[in-house]
Image 1 (tube, rainbow, N blue to C red):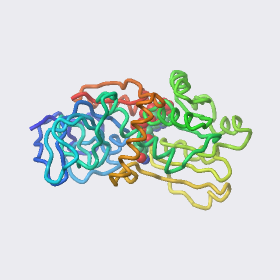
Image 2: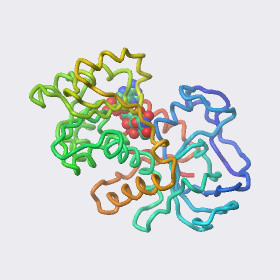
Image 3: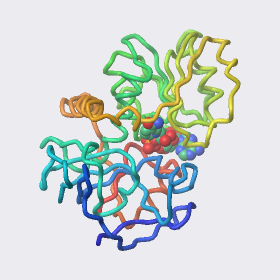
Length: 324
Ligand SMILES: NC(=O)c1ccc[n+]([C@@H]2O[C@H](COP(=O)([O-])OP(=O)(O)OC[C@H]3O[C@@H](n4cnc5c(N)ncnc54)[C@H](OP(=O)(O)O)[C@@H]3O)[C@@H](O)[C@H]2O)c1
């Protein structure tokens, strides 16, 4: 048995219950991990609220963790009990002291990266990697717009895009967040509560707009993002912190020959060689100090509800982790 945070129906954070659950023996290709740190991500909110329905109730949410392998199932050859690992993958189940994970989705963590840092960076960092290098590859000299530039994914996108030679514009909700984004490579933070971000992006780019826009906000920013996009630009709608985007008429893209992507990390990392390439690239830039992982805000696993209230309340910057 192990302790976990479970939900019995979709709803608010008050529905989190601290319970004892069985940890099954690892099956073919599976391993049991004892978590030392668990990542909190916006997708956890979508699972909790039912925006992304879960297959059964009660359910344990969470898709990211770091810790120690306790046992491996049949057919697992490249992991052994005692290995330090991290993962970011389906199925949900990370808000627990222990759980079973597909072994092919686990990555060994080098000694220079702590468990807390690993839990803070795997899902958000691999997202930054594939967005910048696979979905909408950027080139030196590009101007990119990063929404929620002081957020978990945002701080990593800003640093990595800057390292790749881009001019980085970001949107943030406060002056404190603007200062943090600036310290992480964002050349031009825009406090969107004061300024119309699309107009400001146009102004900063001499009327051209941004060639690539990484938008994890969704409903509230979609129209402005299209407006802020350059001719032949790419709008990457990779999240919906403000709610789902309304259905669109594709012909609106013809005004700029714009293209839109709606990518999901887990499709890019489903095959182990791709996972190792993407995670390896992330570990490399973090180990070299090119992308810094700020010390994440820590909550006891039991206090996951407070972590969700803070994340949805826009009171956080960088990553959040739950400590079992
Ligand atoms: N598709 C993928 O593969 C993938 C993978 C990872 C994450 N994501 C997406 O990336 C986005 C960021 O995730 P994250 O975990 O790093 O979260 P986060 O950016 O740390 O937190 C969300 C931030 O969004 C901003 N925001 C604007 N409007 C909001 C609203 N109505 N409600 C709440 N927040 C709002 C807030 O920043 P300000 O105060 O600055 O406005 C808030 O701090 C999410 O949409 C998530 O789903 C997608």
